[in-house]
Length: 117
Image 1 (tube, rainbow, N blue to C red):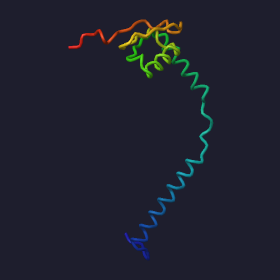
Image 2: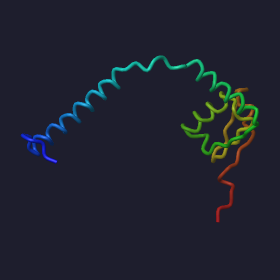
Image 3: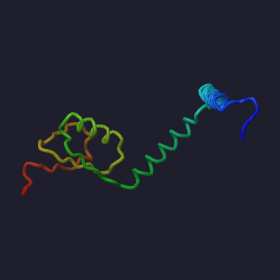
Image 4: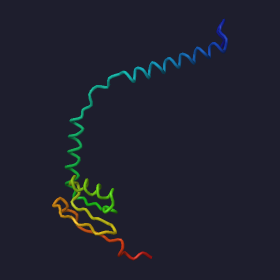
């Protein structure tokens, strides 16, 4: 279908420029629209409810390499969160805990003493 007085090149440029302007308007509108306040209080309440529910499941976890820098931080976070009923450490070095917060750390499995064949 040919339009009188319009060449194929001019029609292509017109359609391309219309598409670019439409996308520019859409992006401008998306950037400048206000989504409104997020319901932070309800999200934090949901997270707290999930934590309490998970605590009742009486789960345990193990940490491989708790004597390293990352393992120490992970162990501290896990113990402070109190999500797990039992924490078992697997590592090469024996760790000592004087702090009462580590009372649910129940045991060590020393890798140096495991027979690897």
